[in-house]
Each structure stands twice: as C-alpha cells, then as structure tokens.
Image 1 (cartoon, helix red, strand yellow):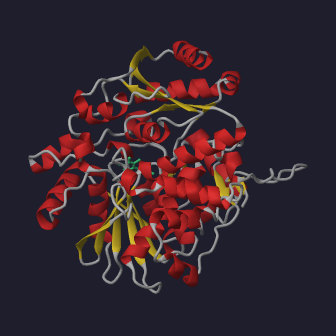
Image 2 (cartoon, helix red, strand yellow):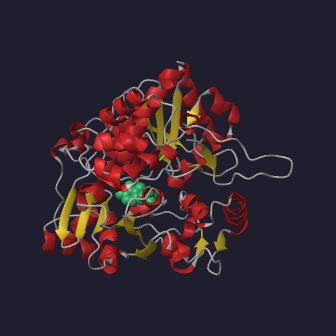
Image 3 (cartoon, rainbow, N blue to C red):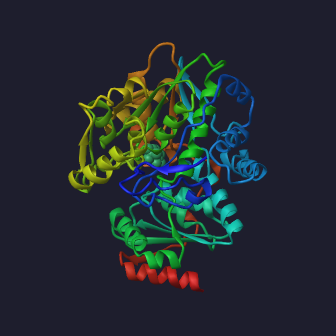
Length: 479
Ligand SMILES: *Cc1c(COP(=O)(O)O)cnc(C)c1O
C-alpha cells in the first residue's frame, strides 16, 4: 500500500512525487507539499470477509483492518502490537468499544473507557506502541512537542509514558484546563513525560509549537515530531471501531446502520468515511458540531469558511471548539474525484488567501450527501444540557457534553428501520462542571481516578518564550 498527498499532482516537467509506505509517514504530520496523506485506494471488504470478522475479538479485528494498510511491518509483529494495545486491562471491557442500547434503534458506542476517558485513546494507544516498535527498529529517538487544551495532550502522554525512544514535551495554558484534566497530566511521574504550563492561552502554546517546528535545524537536530490528528495512523486506528460498532449492531450484512459523530477537526468522522469507502454498510454519517459550526455550514451550503480566533466560541464542549477542521481536506479530495490540483487550489490557495471556498454550485457538492452519505446538525449549550437531562431521565445514562451534542443531532436525524449509533467521545467526569449544571449532581468517577486531584504534580511553569523552551528541550536531550 502506498500513500500520496491530497495535493500531489504532476506539473510541467515533473511527475507526481512517488508514493510512500506506511512506516515512512508514521512519524510525519503534513506531507511536504502541505497536503495530507491518504492511501492510493481503499481496500474493499466483501460480505464473506465481514462475516468472517463477526466473531473476532477487537484486537484481532484491528489487526485484520490495519494489515490492509500496513505492509512494511511483519504480520506477526503487527498482530502482537494490536493485541498488546487493545486489552481489557487498558480499555475496561472485553468488547473494548461496548454498544449500549438507549432505545429502539438508538445506541451509544462507548469509545471512552481507555486511560484518559476520551475516544482519542483508541488511536493514541496504538500509536504509542507503533512508535516504540518503529523507533527501536530504526535505532532512532523522537521528541514529541505538542500543545493541548485538554484531551489530546493527556491521551498522548498516557500512550507514550514509559515507552523507549520517545519523550513528550507537552505545553498547556496555565490554569485553563479543568482540575481533573490537570491532575491527569501533571500526576504522571514518568521521566519521558515533561509537562510545561505556559503563562498564556492555548494559542500561545500552539505558536510555540509552530516556531519550534519551523526551525528546521533545531527540528532535525532534536528529532522533533508531533502526534496531531492529521497523522494517518491515528485515522487508520479509528476505522476499526466503525467496523466493531457495525458488527455489534447488526446480525447480517444486508443491514445498514448510521453513525452520528461529535466533530471538531473531522478526524473521527473521517475514519467513518474511510470505513464506508471500504464497503462497510453505513447508511448516513452524521456530522454533529457545537456552536462552532464550520462543518455544519459546509454540509448545508457547500461553503467552507474558516473562522478566526475571535469568532471561535468557547463552549461547554471544548474539544470541538475549532475554527478550521484539519482533516477535512481528506474528504474534499475524495469528493472532487481525488483531484490533487483542485484540492491544492482550494486548501493551499483559496483558504490561505481568502479563508473560504464555495462548492455550493459545483456538481460534486450534492454527492457529499447522495453518494458519500453525509449530513449534519449542530447544538447549543442549552440543547446539550437538555439532552443530558433527558438522557439521564429517560434511559438512566449520564453522557458528557460532546456526546450530548451527538445525541441531540442523532435524535433529529434518525429514520425508522436504520439503527443510529452515537459515538460517545468522552466520559462525563472530564466535564463535571457542566454535568452539575445539568443534573445538579457530580457525575460518576471511575474508581481508578479517586482523589487524583490530590496527587503530587510535576509541571514546569514557563513564559511563552521560544528561546527558553528550546533551551529546555536541548538541555533535556543533551543530558
Ligand atoms: C477530539 C474530540 C472531539 C472531536 O473529534 P475530531 O476528531 O476532532 O472531530 C469530540 N469529542 C471529544 C471529547 C474529543 O476529545
């Protein structure tokens, strides 16, 4: 399997860049031309194969799917990595992603029982094991330098803690994460995890990452990498739970199901798109946004309009407060018939210069719904609170604010005869203040998190000063 950038084109006198293999892109973010990597084709899954997969444990299902995309890791090693990753000890249940019935034809797919209680563990845990394996094989080391407002940083740290060859430097805005999120990250005592509380806001942290990554000499010398959501391996790992959800909700392959996905950077639902392209019988992929409705606007109108920081609302579903959906280019590339030149014109040129493009009148746009199965909706804070209350009262299930966004939109878009699976993207304890606002009581806390706020913390506090951060990285690595 070869991977190509969404912006790869042949230009006068130059052929398109050669495809790359999985391990070549494993540690990379953007392709050199600014595009995102996608496989040259989507492997097709026939009914016989799907039937064979019905009885598999999650780890073995993961191996079957991942092995279609990875041909430069020996099969036995890849299977061992999947089995080491998806265990009941790490993910809390034997099913790994258990399906909970709420009502006739309405389900929750539980993706948040991993170490940090958000769905990002599903992919990040595999990434940690793949990184460790690959770095050991190459005799290399990697320093992950990132910025987080909460979920991504903790998922990355819990995936990389104790791993050989990997160190994590994670910046976060001082005092801005919830007490639970701070405790999760700062109580880690592993030597390869370095938490940096930056005196500033999330944008300051992101600017630090951009400055450090932009210094190519420094980046090369200290082997700086990232684990952001545009990484193909993360997307690939997320494809697995769409299959696992389908197989739990159906008894034979003539049945179709729909998924409703709380969305920010379009990573999660893009994995659903890949699963559907592989032939999984998915009816609709419903994109649910909060007040930051960049994606909902596109699926309603064909207009994709990036927002500035000032127009990005702080909401009660903070992990979806995005102004620019970093994985969206992958879907648009497919929508346009995999036309790299047009994708480059939209994302490399129109977005860079005008911050928007409009496909409303393009003959391809109606295919987003008709051919690719997409629809969308959104929620407000008040609607999420009402949904949390209603779900607790009616079904006895407490959901978090992101999942509530998904359930609200799912209820609007369900159709009789097609099961609707809402992806549960975090557990309510991560966003306790809003649950108290909705229900007047604290959400349940998994036993292993009892009293974590009182644990000793290890965190460096620093100014948003690039030189000082670089000096810290250099000192740590050269020691
Ligand atoms: C990251 C995140 C999302 C958004 O997922 P995308 O892949 O960015 O669309 C939704 N909910 C929670 C809890 C998250 O952590």
